[in-house]
Length: 197
Image (cartoon, rainbow, N blue to C red; front, side):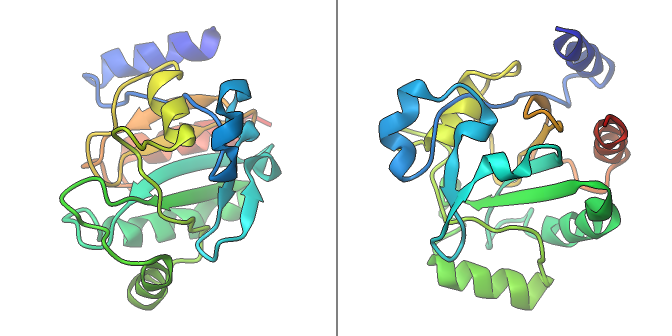
């Protein structure tokens, strides 16, 4: 309740720039378990190489969950995301990137092509996951959770929308796609979450 109040207060302070958070269920195979999923850590997602990753392995860490695309005007945000990751990962920070082709067909490639692009062009070292849908009738259960059952529901508006998840798996903020990862607003919230043990 205190987190919700704080997040609502922050939204008011920032003119609604921080919005949204999770709502949903499991991963690729987890689609069948969707109805039983109650929290962020209940999901199992395929990484960019197709290997299943249980999100509960990130318990105790601060997470920035981002839907990404390779051909978007926001794609250069990969640079800031990597810098943010390098700055805070030793303190328990992870970025989870979920490529999606929902907006302007700006992520048309295969998982292998996306991985190659991210490594070659942006030297990304944070976790990349397999391409999913974050909007529409085929919306992945993870994003059903983020957009429908979180304290800040609402559809993903475009590529590079960001959700901040605290060390307990609670989504505590949603940042719009145009807000750069190195912005003072995001950095301040990441540091606040990391300060809580």
